[in-house]
Image 1 (tube, rainbow, N blue to C red):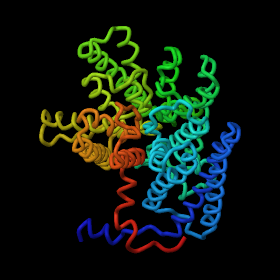
Image 2: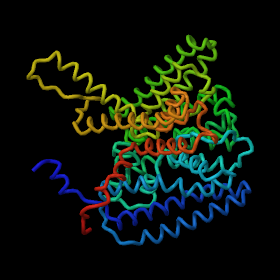
Image 3: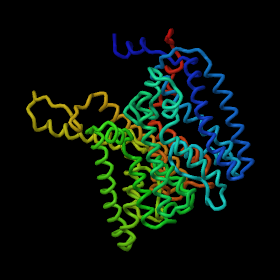
Length: 489
């Protein structure tokens, strides 16, 4: 019997009762998270927006309470976990669009803003933030904050019970090595680290002279590597000390969150964590040098400006934070190309950063090096790829290479409609990669005047990039929904 036929016979479709039950629990968690912008809207006196948030919370609580009472098996299949995560990242912006429409946005633009927030991208269709309601600005940053850690991870840490349910739900991206290791304990560790980074970020920003409101919003956007700024000119509003501090917060968010817990709580070093830390810093420095050279040689920019803007843009792109100190639309072609590659790769696996992750690029480089090395070895020599002292498994390598290919495919398919509709090929590629890598840097194409089709493509790219594509493929796979279903507890 072929392997494909065996797999087909062992395949189980999702059980709707399981999906509904835990979707209900996630709705309750989302209702609790939505209390925060409700309180903010009351403080800021936005009564109409408060009413909208109240209606959303009531609806989520009623739906969640009804579904959570369903009786269902305690074990969750892998495809059920992925479906639940994908459903929440699709459902959340749909629901949150309603209160955001209270800030004089139409549904398409409100949905775009909500998707950009919950996926920690930071692209916006708003031409200006002048006179934007404070509740709107806070709600965007707050969505990025809980979207960065993941609605599911927060639910695991605070609400859901441990066990196999937690193990199969603790993925906000395609693989269990991303963000948390797969248990409620690890989810709580990630939440503790995330909370500490947030508090330190707010205190540091406030001590550097940023107002409390801006300090909170910039910190939310930085540690989640989201990039939603409450001002039109992003970080250009502030001097270099504030810009450096926010950049360091972005770098902290682009490093595996478990790294901090293992170092300071468990007092142990993990080679892969240190490898990713070095990789993010080295990659950012290399991009900084490349962008500096392009700015100086191609754009003839003065050295003081080069030394100011190039490192900030490079670190912002590599961490997929999306902050900027100068308009990206004014950059030369060489700088744009370097930032495109940086945004596509992204930060460390297990962090809040987007992209297909530097760790997977290192996997690919290790395999490529092995292929070259084997040309110099005897035919019978056996050598396996290794990284950070650990032997790489074939499944890990296949998954990493597949994900890189899928990211490139999504970018290519999304880029073609932009070019077909007459937009600059390079600027279109920049915008599409920024959305897929959930970076948020923009050359100015994203806006209210962008055709609805292209807005929709960017929305799909942001959702694809945040869940690393595989969860959506599982959602679309017919075998996920049709076929035999596992019975029993």
